[in-house]
Amino acid sequence: MSDAESRGVPHDALSAVGARRRLQIERLVAGGDALARDTDGRVVFVDTGLPGETIEAEFVEVKRDFARARTLRVVAASPVRVTPPCRHVADGCGGCDWQHLAAHAQHDAKAAVVREAFARTARLPEAPIVRGGAVSHDASRTTVRMAVTPSGRLGFRRASSHESVEIEQCLVMHPLLQSLVSTVGVRGDGEVTLRCSVATGERAVWSHDKARVLGLPDDVAAGAAAVVHEDVAGARLRVSMASFFQASPQAAELLVDAVARAAGNALDGRDGVVVDAYGGVGLFAATVVPIGVQCVLVESSESACSDAYENLRGRSAMVMHTRFEHWRAVRAGLVIADPARSGLGKAGVTTLLDTAAPTVVLVSCDAVAAARDARLLVDAGYDLVNAEVLDLFPHTHHVEVVSHFVRD
Image (cartoon, rainbow, N blue to C red; front, side):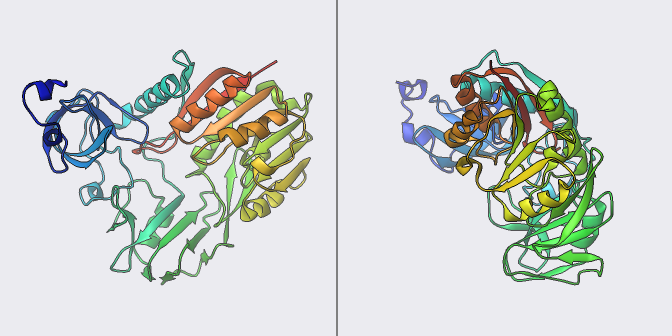
């Protein structure tokens, strides 16, 4: 019997949708929410809470094993709570979900989330989690995906909603893109990606749906095949609008540096080829792998493969257009893997094992996926050297983890 039930309070009344409760926040968790517990011990995920705070919250979803609640009032605030620096947070914009957390505290908070994921999901409580690089908190994103608002403007989704919020200014958007948001119109519904290059000043847009972007300046290319060129770690990379790329060249530089340090001597090619799995436009193959070392890039996106062919000209590289899980593996000395948010999973790890690579560098954009893949690799005989936590997405819970594995 729970404490609440022993006091004669019905269980259903404790956690009904719409019920209000004073909660004590324990910690931040993967996905960005804060974790608290109801009076009956049930886990409650709360938006915009911070560790150590007391808040008044309203339940918005109730399940058998957990509930979700929204913060109504902060009763006792954390010393690292701040007023969100962007006014559109108050309008409901969900683009930057950690603006209430002081900038100087965000990187440590992300490292703590990763540490807990490795302890709970990977069952590696002593995993060597280290804090890596971070972009400055005023760094500008050069790729943004936006929603079309009912008034035919560009905006962002509301938090936990498909509704859109029109914006006038964006705290994290590059000025070359901000000027587009304030001038163009959109006819139709859907989402639009904007991208620019710091190196060249090129700009491009891509409507993912049937929406038409109106009033584009003459210098802006449009469509999935439109390209920009960006410089990263001394390499000029072609990036098509339909291809994935990091949020900014600064973020890409930090990621390249972390991968290069983790790969170390395994980049010399002595133990076999370097495999760039889920290699995209060739970010790592073009920057980390030395010229003359044999490299195989495996990528399922046709657009990214087309970019990679261009970006790897003059290198000893082969581009394979296929899903990594379907690829016929070759013997490798090093595998660099940068899978989608869901991670390698069992199928990806199976293919990776077929390479017999003694060194693996895994890039993960989700803390739980990183931990889940770490458990699979450890069970397969790899040792985790360390996992480096990078903060490439200021004011959000999003994190990048570069994990280094070796085996004899």
